[in-house]
Amino acid sequence: MNITFDPAKDRLNIANHGVSLALAARLEWDLMVCREDDREDYGELRLQCFAPIADQLYCVICIEDDDDYRIISLREATPREVRNYARDRQDW
Image (tube, rainbow, N blue to C red; front, top):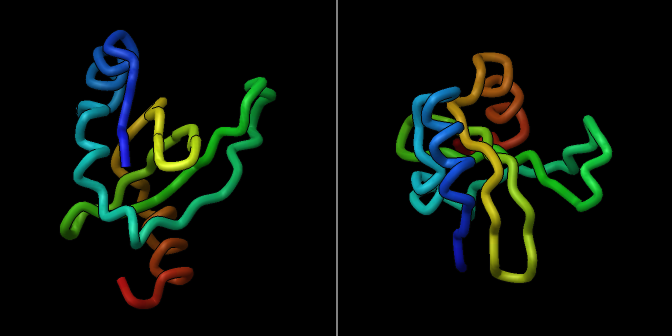
């Protein structure tokens, strides 16, 4: 799996969410739950995914192309997102 991201978006993500997009490489991808991010017409298929790193759940917006993931945004999940994830993934 290859993780890529735009360095300018990384700086913006750090400013907005306090985490680097590089952290996505540490996500437990096998525990990921995804849905299409259709909040806007992005002109490409974006996924909104949730996956943990240790005991912290993260929300990642990404574009998947085979085994390549371009990371758009990464942040800690909200309490509501954590509850929804726990409901969907009872093994977490």
